[in-house]
Amino acid sequence: DNWRGNGTWNIDVWDTKDGKLKYSLTHPRFYSMVFSPDGSYLVVGGSKTIRFIDPQTGEIKFEDFQTSPIRELLFSPDGNLLVSAGYSDIQTWDTNTFEKSFSFPYGVKNLDGIDISPDGTMLASMHTPYPARFLRVWDLHTGESIYHIEGDFQNWGKVKFNQDGTLLVTTGLSTKGLQIWDTKSGDLLWTYERSPTVMDFDFFNFSQDGKILTFVGRDGTVRVFATCDQECPTLQTIP
Image (cartoon, rainbow, N blue to C red; front, side):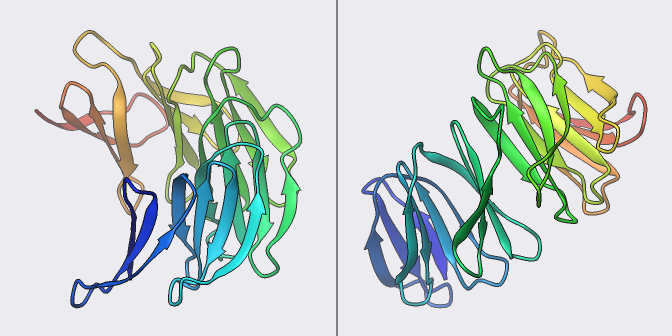
């Protein structure tokens, strides 16, 4: 089934084989939703609630009230843990019991983006609105901070692990533009700076083998790079 949110704040369930609407659910204003890896749950993050829904029946299996809107939802690769990120907090949930595992303890404000490492051991969080401008990598299962990097990060930051979890990419409205970090050490490996012709980086992703990084700037150009531990060569630029 395919879920989508529309302007009336409904969640519609469609049969992908015949394209027919199966049923609709009303929901308070929401910002994010994600399927569990096995498809057994749809989780919806609203302005004040988080709901675990059975996608086959639309039945709400669990609901909890939040103190801030939930901007992002991510499952761990094994599906046993859910991370919910609001404007001012990050929480983890045991998806087998629907209980909160823990809340990340400190310095979690002005949150812009999160990502989970492919092996499910680390969480990266990007905090960019003034005055908090930093990247933090956490132990996903204990909530302990592994390292904290303050930098020239600006609004609308994004963060993403590569496929083997050895690299992190960050972007934002910053003079530094796009940066690649060593996940273990937190060292900065490479920077692609903004320029009058290359402004903000709206979208980026790794190839399946993690060797190629592609990103799109607001100038409408697609740039393809080889990932590396120093200045990365441009493989192709597509206007």
